[in-house]
Amino acid sequence: MTPKPICVGGEWRRGGGDVYASRYPADDSVNAELAAANVADVEEAIEAADAARRRPDWSGLKPHERAGVLYRISSLIRERAEELAQLQRRDNGKPISETRALVASAAGTFQFFAAACETLEETITPARGDYLSMSVHEPMGVIAAITPWNSPIASEAQKLAPALAAGNAVIVKPAEVTPLAALELGRICEQAGVPKGVVSVLPGKGSVIGDAIVKHPLVKKVSFTGGTMTGRALAQLAAKKLMPVTLELGGKSPTIVFEDADLDHAVHGVLFGIFSSSGESCIAGSRLFVHESIRTPFLERLVAKANALRVGDPEDPRTQMGPLITAKHRESIENYVQLGLDEGGRLLAGGERPRGDLFDRGWFYKPTVLTGLANDARICQEEIFGPVLVASPFRDEAALLEQANDSVFGLAAGIWTRDYKRAWRVARALEVGTVWINTYKQLSISTPFSGIKDSGVGIEKGRLGILQYKHQKSVYLGLNEAPLPWAD
Ligand code: NAD
Image (tube, rainbow, N blue to C red):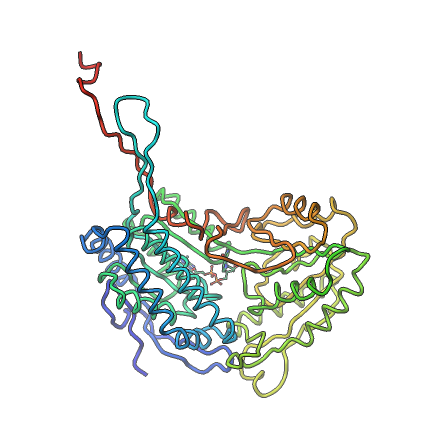
């Protein structure tokens, strides 16, 4: 197999690093071989990006012209939607229904930021002297977009679209195991008219090329989505350069079911919240708090439905849960479940691999529900990033809030109740970036997304998300008829 080319400063060529394979998690077959980028490629790509972003064919574009390029990217993604969805299914094993939605979301993201680009206004501020004072925004320069493996094309679009809309050049560093969608996005950018060198796509190991990208003096901002440990290490490197970062990190999100909830909706919402994407989702609702008065009937219904979820072939549009990303990741999830049992937990569902021809070839794991654990058990506190739900009862609102907020993470939460006053009160008291009330995992590019505590720093999405990739500048235009008085 000839290694697939990568994009270094606009040149499509073999990377200088080791050859490795992208594999299909459903049966471990090889999707493609590629040679990773090496540190010399990083150097070349960043220098090319810095030169390209200064050239008039990018820096000289009027906002509506740059928006035109982004609209074309959006259209090209839509034209190739099925191909991209299939590619991503093979790259990370998500069910096709999900990868189709991710591709649609990526196209929508480029469309949204194209509109943000051509409608973004700069302001004239109230003057306190004989001048016109303005607040304007400039591109930052070269941006590093570092992404995880769980929702590749959507994560990459979420960084690439606003960073390009803001007039920057971008080095995309996809997760090592899921490089294919990012490479195609690189091709699409080129086809849509993004000048050569403005976008590079560098697959490879985070500890080698990710590190080299972050440390490079010409990189002026890192937008990172991934694990908290990695994010913290990047922030330390960024601090040395005094470089801003946006960090979208891990989560351990509580979902709360009050006794007056519509139980049918709540059961479906809790299941979707934890088991969609096989639980490999930063916003997975992995901690369930259910009011003790409804605990038994609620858990019975939840467990019956969890056992009936369609785990299987990602190519089948009816499949709800595909395989996990790698054998190693499945082992880590199995170790967590064992730890939960060792800590005194009781299994209500799953806790094992499904068996059978298809299942024996890939990295499948059953939807798993555990109960009987104290809130400080490791399995209730650490991010598992898999299809494992820990269910705990609660009695009153104050104790519930204490437990729900007793977490290093602060990404998201769900509330199920018919009492709107309680919903509002609890939503405001939860220490998280996003709260869903009587729904879960609904996301819109027009609504800002952020994490607090160990879940992150900074905001993505939203119309003003574009400003995360610009720096503010103040300009005073003198209107004095006479010289400044001090000179007299
Ligand atoms: P990870 O931190 O291992 O890797 C993320 C990216 O960082 C990859 O591209 C990786 O190669 C790169 N990287 C690793 N070490 C690096 C280094 N030293 N320097 C520079 N880059 C480096 O995360 P993962 O396992 O790919 O993804 C899972 C994590 O992502 C989970 O914790 C999940 O919660 C989080 N996540 C968060 C969000 C969010 O929006 N908050 C969304 C999706 C995933």
